[in-house]
Structures are given as C-alpha cells and as structure tokens.
Image 1 (cartoon, rainbow, N blue to C red):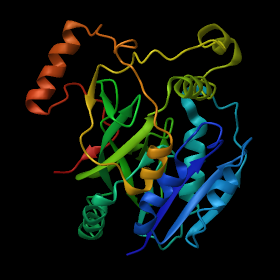
Image 2: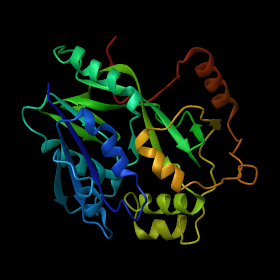
Image 3: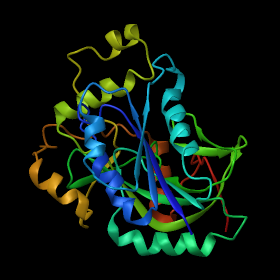
Image 4: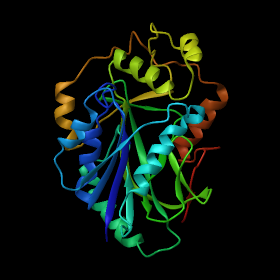
Length: 292
C-alpha cells in the first residue's frame, strides 16, 4: 500500500501557519509528500526545504489572484498538488497548512487505510475536527462550522477539490466515505488577537476586491472573537510536533474582556440542544456521502 501526502501553501511565515507541523504530523504515514508552494513574500519555500525529508517534493506555483469568487484559488492549488502524486499511490492524504494530526491516531488511520483499500464502495475517509480557538487551551463550537471533512482519498481519476478546497468531489458528485475515529486538530483560530486580525484580513483578500476590503476590513480592523457559539476547555494533549511551538508562543486571552457573543437565536439554541443530546446535527451541510 502506497500513501502520498499533499498540500499547498503560500506566505506561511507572514501568516504564521504551522505548516511544518502539519506536514510532519502525517509524514510517517506517507511514502511521498507533494507540497505546492505559491509565490510567497517570505521564506516559505525554505521553511519547507528545511524539513529535510527525502519524501518531500516541492512544486513552485504562481497563484491566480483574480480567482476571488468563493475562494477558487485554494481549490486550484489543491488540484495541482493532487495531480502531482505518483500514479501508483493507493491513498492521498490531504492536510491544510493549519491542520495537524495527533500521533495517537496514526494506528487507527493506518488500519482504516488497509481495511478499506479494496472496498470500491469506500472512496475516502472522513475525519472529525477540533477547532482550537483564541489559544491552545480552548476550542470553539458552532453549528456554522464544519465538524467533519474528507482528508484521505483513494487515488481515483476525476477527483477534484470543491469550492474553496474544504472538500472534494468525484465527477461532480459527492464522494462516498467512511467516518473514522480520528481527529484533525485545526489551529487556524489559535492565534493572539493581532494575529487573528491579520489572518482574517489576509484570508478575505482571496474572496473580495480592495473596495470591499476597505469598507468592511480596514487597516484598523480588530477581531472580536464573536464567531464561536461556545467555548470549551481542552483537556487532552496536543500533538508532539506542536509542543515546541506551543511552549514558545503562548499568550493570554482574557475572555472576560472579550466575551464570546451570546446572540444565538432560539432556533439555533434548540438545534444545538438536539445535537448535544443525540449527536444529530439537523440540517448539516455534508459535502460527502457516508457509507454505513
């Protein structure tokens, strides 16, 4: 069984993406790893080179910044990486630059790849998510956030990244997947206030023009920690590859002065209660089809 990892990245230093940790968190599971490095204004390419692994193949890319509708450029770069994996690979493991897999899930992931390798009805594996929020000590929850996504795909011709690269489609239909008992740790929201403000502004440039940015997100924009419905204390352990980063970049967030907004509608509160009691997310958007 051959496994290829793949990702894309641009301006990882400028935007403080833990892309090195993302790649190295799944590198032990991969026989090769494709990294499409966009035209960056910092030392992103050297960052990837310094991982110093013979498994890694870097492909240089120039982003089409005109593809702003729905964040299409992210899907375009993802497709470049997926297209570059070896033809004889069985599985393709996708990881984004702010996602990390805990080593405790490696045995589960490896077993699921082996068990489902020769099952044609399974085209991908679906992961659960923890979205760290504000700091490494808390994670946020919201019905508006995705709680599952495809991160392992069989190497099937016709698979393309969908919309802004959150998921995938096969010949324009939803991919048939198995939900596995493994999590992706999403660290995109685990930044200090200034870092999150910069992240939101930079991210929105790939969706909106300068006029929109000037009106809605001027240079004075400050992130208000208002997009999580609730905040929970994280009691587990972080991946080993994240330990050094966490120890060297800790900051304090006083959520007493920056409270999570409590403006949930009655409807959303009722739906959240149903999910808490049953595990069923009513009306959940699913960019996949779970095979039982």
